[in-house]
Image (cartoon, rainbow, N blue to C red; front, top):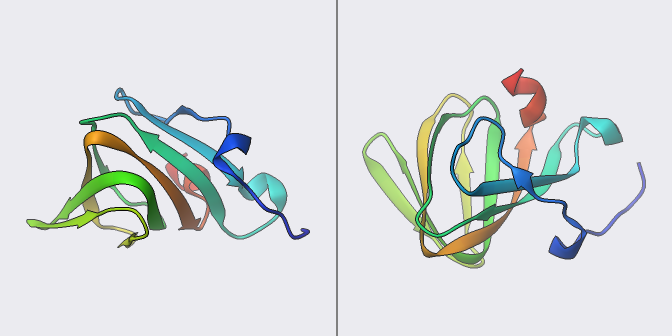
Length: 116
């Protein structure tokens, strides 16, 4: 695998698998590229909510907007430049605010393989 750079303009965002809301993802690096992690971008439309039990360790970096992540009755709010770690096995609710959000993410191992 060679050194690569990615921009949101390179992303082909698709509806997040298994979600009904306006939440879109684009894997830029994943199992198809031979690496051990998935790296990508996510876009949340305004006022979207997603509940998930994490099947992988997931790190989400907020690039634009704001997200709330709730787990075990505790909520963290993250804005641009802030990082949220969601450990494997944790049940989380991710909610976008009025302006929506743009994120980058890194998961270990590959989240698509773990969902199957």
